[in-house]
Length: 227
Image (cartoon, rainbow, N blue to C red; front, side, top):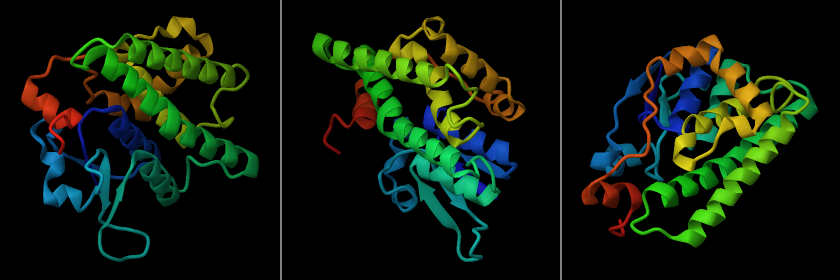
């Protein structure tokens, strides 16, 4: 059994899809990041960067004490190794899966997140920041669309790379992007969304539009108090 901490964020959805695809039993542990529970000593012992998701595996392969893993990319690779799937066997496809996973972790996730922040949550409208990150969002969507022009999945076969990238597109209202502008991405997005494991995960997920937060919640979420 694996415990997973976090709510309905893109990075949590990655791990949930991975476990569903692999048939790994899990339980969701509530963690209210708007109340600051991610800063508790108990959670910091699991996720020292106070970010979600984090998992605790009660039955690690070495037979030892429960094992905690943080960072969503590391979690996906851990789950793939544990479940024996979702990372291609061939050298070239495996290399592609790893590269696209790193692309998601270093580019797609952070840039879409920054665009969403400056479009929806910054205390003042900053035209330079909005333009900078919106252009980068469009560029990254074009990169993804080009990569999918002649293949069904990013590594040629369904893998951790697709699972990592897909959930961020659920929240495209936050970064103001239309899938109709990227036909290859739209086809890929629909195909993954139709997978039984993904549908099981999404049955329990709420994709919220941008929200209004009070000052205390903003302080906790965006570290405006210097925490």
